[in-house]
Image 1 (tube, one colour):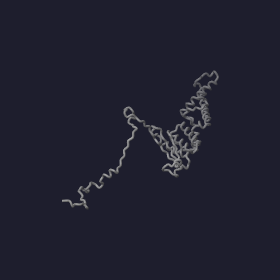
Image 2 (cartoon, helix red, strand yellow):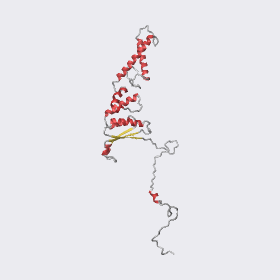
Image 3 (cartoon, helix red, strand yellow):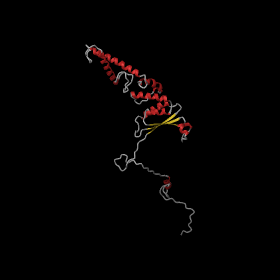
Length: 277
């Protein structure tokens, strides 16, 4: 990478001057400075590699000059908030905007951490609008997000709602078909609720619903090689009513028998026996 030119492909943009990436940058920069210093020497200094005392001294000078150059480059690039290092973004945005300086614990890398703060700036200055609520959810999960305001449903005469629901809204997240259950959904849900408390109007209440879908393709039941062959696009239904069985049952036990199984005598009245012999 050329000197004093912003490298968008850097993986680590912290203020700490250490780590594997910084050591590699320092080595490459110091080699460039070292070569420049050697070229400034008179012709009787013929060594082009590190070995003699003067090359050792020049190498030490090159390393320190390279440290200074890299530090000045990083400071110069901090003027643009799109490229400001995440440490400074945290000190300004995270500390002042996030409640009690709490950051979602989702294992952000340095690049993801900076991207998170830049998105927070964008969302925060959009204001407390439905789009901002949806953008918060999309920071942590993929799929379609729909924000529904309750007062609009009340105006439309939605059943089960009344004027007491006018200050609520629903956030429905529909997962990508076939995506399954995200492994970090519970951590993401905690982060979403934390940020929604920053963006939503203070007088509102909300409910988050996660909807998971799967793709189902009609298969060919006559093709044994079709993995969806057992999935048919037909419907069957069956209806039963238990009251019919209740009517057919004799609930007092065995008819004409007592609990011991003996026949029970019945009192018969009003029978006509005039024709009996």
